[in-house]
Length: 323
Ligand code: GLV
Ligand code: GLV
Image 1 (tube, helix red, strand yellow):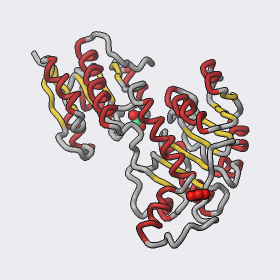
Image 2 (cartoon, rainbow, N blue to C red; image 1 turned 120 degrees about the vertical axis):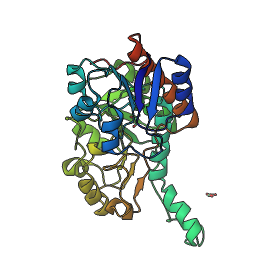
Image 3 (tube, rainbow, N blue to C red; image 1 turned 135 degrees about the vertical axis):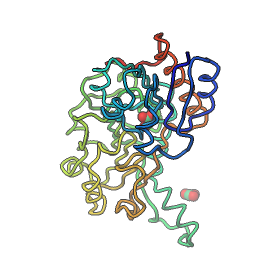
Image 4 (spheres, rainbow, N blue to C red; image 1 turned 90 degrees about the horizontal axis):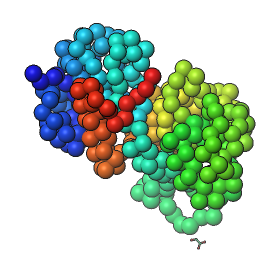
């Protein structure tokens, strides 16, 4: 008898192929590129043995109860899992698959692109070319900040943080500071100095947030944080939006407390088009596209399908979250 799986969205075809070739499950799906509504999610999971979800789906006790006792596995098409109520999942003995590693390079690349775009004011420049603001080559026009000789601070030197650091060093970065729960041996490769968060914040020219969202990091970048930054400091976040207090960030950017911010993640997502941050020239906001290369999304789709199948069949999952 085929096991039931529910997919909360259309996923890359690489993943669909693996699911249908396996021949062990009957797939039902929220067949759209837009998020499933809560009521449809609660209905869709009923009786499911497996759930494949995205970071935009909140999987809590209510969803798990709606699914019922069949549910063996949750496979998320993401490396982040802050949208999953891990304690509730653990209590029910459900296994979890996720997609680390395969998106590290793409996400690091995007973060570097965002940092450079923010520091060198690329969106503003593009806009000026289009709107006629480019009147001549002007010595003092559209100046920004360069990486050469700078101090970079990475908050959370994990897989992605380290990949960002490796890519930034060749730009001539002088010091690479990092903070987090523990010092990392592998930081030696980038001459990383493990420092307290306060030191990182006050000494860095560029701050890159690359930690996971936990109770500890929620709201970490707040008024006190921004007030310790240099006035020339550039802040970049490609982790989760709620690591940042956005009212405090707005204040810091509009008052000149800090120079600029680049965000690939916001609260909420999508960010409403009338949000105050979007009125600021020194804030570059991207629509959470860290892992968005064709090949990476294909690999994520395949991996999330393999994780789902492993969980359904009680075999190894290529990337199982251990908790
Ligand atoms: C993206 O933010 C992810 O968690 O994969
Ligand atoms: C800039 O284009 C320069 O020649 O300095």
